[in-house]
Structures are given as C-alpha cells and as structure tokens.
Image (cartoon, rainbow, N blue to C red; front, side):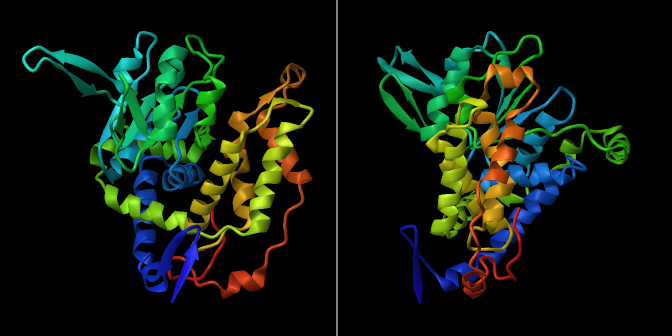
Length: 349
C-alpha cells in the first residue's frame, strides 16, 4: 500500500523504519545539550533548522555561547566542518575559492574555499564587509558556487550556522536584507539562569566540554532525516494559514518591509521538521505559530517611528499571530494517520 505525498511515493513499511531516525535526532539533541545547558528550546530550534534544510543565524551579545552552540551542533555530526572567522579584511574568494593558473598543465585549477563543507560555521558574520557577506548568497540559496563561469556543487547535507553580535556594537555591519532572508531562522541564546550558570562553572571551569564531544550521527543519517521531513503532510488550511501570516506583514502599518515568499516556504519547511520531531507526519497550526517569530522577525524592517518607540519586530509578529484566525484542526483526520516515527502522535516543537 502506497501513498503519494508532494510528488514522492513512500510505503508504509518505509515509514515504520523511520523510528530509528527519531533516535538519531534525539542523540544529536542530547549531545548538544551537554554543552549548551539550560537552553533546550534553542537546541531544538537549531535541530529543526538542520532537518528543514535551512540556515541558522545566532544573534546575541558576546560571551553567551553563540559559537559554542554552532560548534557543538557541528561536532555532534560526523561530517565535514569548516569555520570562517569573519573580519573586515576577509575577501569573498577566501569563502568561495579561487581559480589558480597551473603553469605545468597550462590551465586554471579551482581551489575550493571554506564554504565547501557540510556544516559551515560563520563566526561574527557581521564584522565582515557587505561585499564579503554577499559571497554567501549563492551558496546558501542554490547550494553551489560559481567561479569564472563554472558552477561547483556543495556537499549534502549543507548548512550555514552564523553568529553575529548586535548591530549597535562597535565594528559591525548590518546584514543586507537579501542575506538575512536566506537564513531560515534567527535565535538569541540569552543569559543563562543562575542555576545553569553555576553548573557551567563546575563543568566548564577546568576544560572545554567540546573536547569530549564525539559524533553521535553520520551525515547520511541526517540526509535520511531530511528526506523524512520532506514527506510530512501539510493540509490546505495550514498552508493558507502560513500564507495569511506572511501576507499580514506586507501591509502592516508598523513595517516598511514585510516578509518575502521565501519566508513562507521557510516557515512551512520548519513546521514540517517540527512536526516530524514531535512524532507526527502532518503539520498542525501550532507548529506554524510557534515558529513564526524565529522564522519571520529577522526579515522585517519596522518603520522609524516604531523603532523610536521601542517596539521590536518580534512584538509585531506576536500581534499578527493574535490577529490572524487560526484554522480548525481536523482531529478525525489527524487520529486516522499513522504516526511518522512509529510512536503515538504528540505535539511537536
């Protein structure tokens, strides 16, 4: 017995084997949480973006663990990892690569740059010039790099995890709108609770927890997880709900720039990953609601008056969530669907 979902035919026997993939996601989550303590929602969002084939932007003040989170996620997966330290003197060719003339062979040879890895950590991305930042545009959207008229495919899976300090800090450049729009979600780690900070002093006081972190998943397992997420079903009312949320940002009086159609696509992809992590093969409106702020807020530009008044894009998204009607969930349809990972259906993300 087979069922076609979004152009892909999946047998029920294949879906039964996906329970092993849930265990893989749980191993990655637990591994990262050994380093990033007291922030389970941040770790969960990072894993959601990874499985949704997106890129993650981590924005916060220095010293709260932005780079630590990116490194922990990368080290928990047995795949190629490259770290790029963004500085004002970094050149675009340092990221994408360059063609070098070989005098013996009398032809140009391409030397890949740091972007040719499965997980790329861009540390303090907004300390580089806008010209260098734009070197990531093609690779993040099309998963390829074009040099001297030749296109080179990037490995699979591919994810950029970038950190940035608040724009108001000295020596930083605002990310262009096109750059921000290519990040599926933005997350702020925030300061830890006093209990978590005390535990951090005990655990991190002597050695770095990254030293003992070992890979708990292989790259091909992550690719299988991504395939499973692609097969998650999104009903017409939920798709319409996501479109209505994004459309509301485009005519909001407090915004001078709303979210793009790419934001709608990213919102649904992230919701599908959240549903899969929650043990469901279908997306609920709650999945879309809970991901709306991290997926949409960083793409919006409030008006000058709103910024002077102290309101943030996150608050505007919350207001939109209260205003746009939530579609009713067909509980009978949900109950009739077999769970995606072979366990009882539960609320995701």
